[in-house]
Length: 202
Image (cartoon, rainbow, N blue to C red; front, side):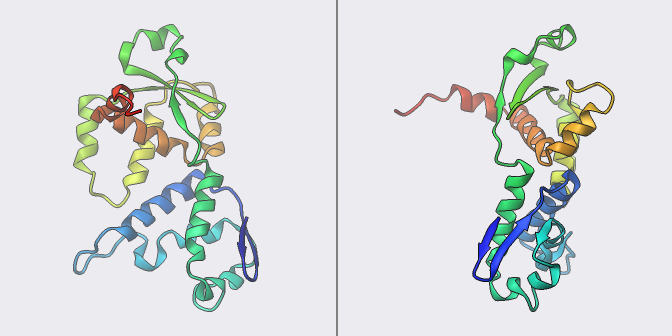
């Protein structure tokens, strides 16, 4: 819930599709626009459509960015974005959990299998291969960056192979596929392991 001088704004959790679209539009909004370029989402949007779609109350007319609360207090859009991400689980830590690599099929992959814990959800994924990583680099500048990242997260899932399990996982955790994809990119770049080995300065 977001408090405003005129009342509360209540959002529902976003769907995975909404979370991906919001992040891609927000990213497009934030980078410099080239002359004549038409950005996905547009500068005015910045994910506004996805935010408004998640508003339970007040009405869309009340929040109208031209003549409603967002016109009067445009800074509310940042609060709405933070709440949108929180409800979607973007703030839930995705932590390494090597103890999850127990199934023979996963153990046989050696270092290529990686375990994560996301809240109370246990996940096993496969690390990216050299060709997969280079295929990602070839489209890195696209405005659907987070859609690509989410696809990486989904395509490399080894756990949750039962009927409907993966679909249920993504439906219940809107940001999880993106978070897994980012972690896999960090592993591919060596950043995750480097961070683990970095000595503390205490």
